[in-house]
Length: 166
Length: 164
Image 1 (cartoon, chains in turn blue, orange):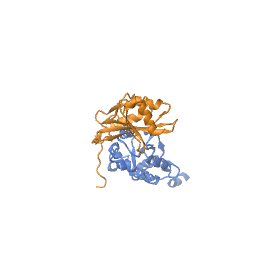
Image 2 (cartoon, chains in turn green, orange):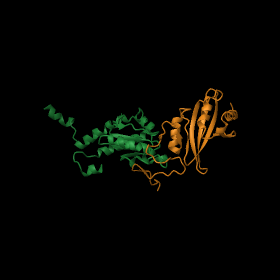
Image 3 (cartoon, helix red, strand yellow):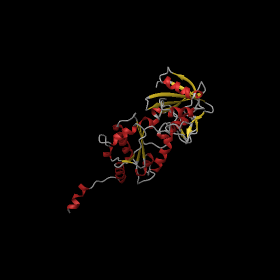
Image 4 (cartoon, chains in turn blue, cyan):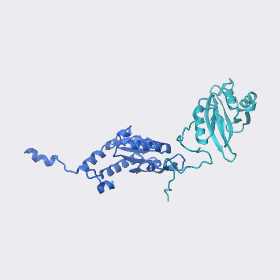
């Protein structure tokens, strides 16, 4: 009797997709991929002051355990091929944040012979974070934008318009 | 020893290999002929008064108009605290010169870098592979007549200006 009466207070109703997405977005493990000076800001972002672990983002050393890849720094053509391999090793669903001018478009070095002008030439990018290098706050904002994007995804109805949009 | 004294001693010992001396430059340098480079360097390294035991730096410059590539060696002696710069001219076509890896082990990577970026072939080098660029890269990027390839493994090297 008392149990039935207390049910409305104990139970939250929601959509299954939202629960799934909420759990996914709250544990976005990111792969450490610092390529240049942006890597220092990436480390700061994981540090105590910015602390993106409060959003569930924990650093991983292996692509096989990662959900997200933060490309932090200048991508050379030599590294671009390896980046593709690492991206392919990540399990689906996977996301990419392009951090800083160099990763976005080649930045300062885009006319250099050895530099790949943008990560999006090699792998698909979800969020671009501008800056040279971006402050930890900017990268945190990038993570929040990615979480917003993850919340839009639909998993129960495959091939729906919402899934296609995401 | 002063650079002039170093030059004099070097000329007395291996006069054939020494081409000229520039004392007024910021870093006084001696121009060495490529043929007898190894013997000259071995003398600079072994002689008790010179004792250049440290190859501080080794680099290359492409003088396109003069049709030559100049390889520059910065030597330093820890026992005597003196230094000298050696310069070696090699033609741009058929740019081959002897390796000084047997004298200074540090030359291994430095020569690989010069080979990678300028295309100077060091005969006698134990492991002459590219150091910085990918193994399958074509051309030597620091040569003035280097033309950037359109794409590398399907990655285009061109991008529209973001300001347009």
